[in-house]
Length: 206
Image 1 (cartoon, rainbow, N blue to C red):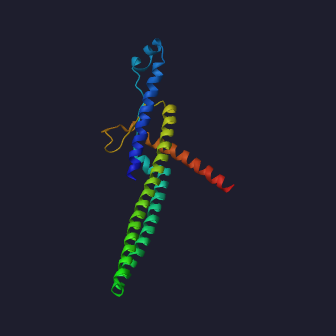
Image 2 (image 1 turned 180 degrees about the vertical axis):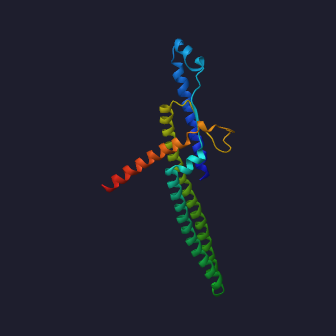
Image 3 (image 1 turned 180 degrees about the horizontal axis):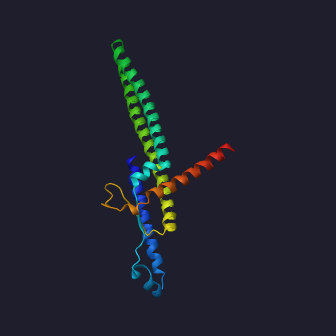
């Protein structure tokens, strides 16, 4: 699910924009007196942090659960396709063995029928791929919302003005470990996910 890493980077980028706008919208409401004793005028450094998206995805229980579910779903659909393909191959083999006993018209009719079945099989394969892409898209959308909502609240509560994503090829060449909040974010996301899962289980047993 390489798409998920890209989605998470987009989520974090949006969170950066949100916190950046939040910071300057708050500063714009300050009076001239406040401006002279706060923010850049006072030398205060805005709080900045980063999240390692690869580590987050590897430890976020929601994503790992959905990843396993999607892999199982892909295996099931692959088996369905292979069963149909195997059945068609058996029909083709039978036709090849018995073609010599058929009239020309009979052989042409069977060939046309097999050709249509091949086309249907190809369409079926495309439909299965579309289903998987749609299901993966729903997981990515859910991941986007969960991480985005959490970072919005977390950024406000911890007074972070900027949260970056730090991973390979992200454009960040170096980041001090003291700015790494990945563990806190993962723990918070997992607590939220486990809480929702517990409530769902309780409702289901009632």
